[in-house]
Length: 179
Image (cartoon, rainbow, N blue to C red):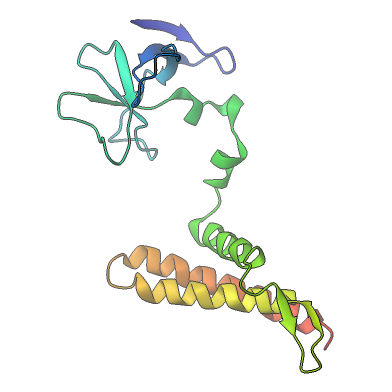
C-alpha cells in the first residue's frame, strides 16, 4: 500500500511504500520506506535504489544480482536526497572522485599490516614514516591508472590525478620530515 505524505525533516513530498525484502524472514515484519515522488532516473545524477511494482504499491531494493525488471519503475529512497538528513557518506560524494580515491588509497596504506614497521640494519624497528606511506599510496594510484587506461579512461584519469595529489602531498611531507 502506498501512502502520500511529506517528509517531517524537510517538507518534501514523499510516498511511503511497503518494502519487499530480498531475503524474507519469518521473524522480521515488512516495513515502509519513503520514496521521492518527483524522481526521474533520466534526469537525476543519483541512480535508483529501489524498483517499484507495476501498481506502485510495493518496492524492492535493487542489487547487482537483481537489477530493475522491464515491468518495474525506478525509484529512489528519500534518505538519499533529504537535505536535512545529509550524512557524512553523502557529503563524501560531493568530494571530487580523485580526492576520494587518494584518501582511500592513503587510508589503506596506513592500516596495511604488510609494512607497519621499518627494520633497520642494526635490527631495531620503527614505524613507517608518513612520507613512505604517501609514496606507497601514490604508487598504487599509478598502478590503478595504468590498469584502467583501456577499459575505463575516465577512471584511469581520476587515478592519475589521485597519484598527483599524493605525490604533491609526499613532496610537502618529505621536506618537513627529519632525516
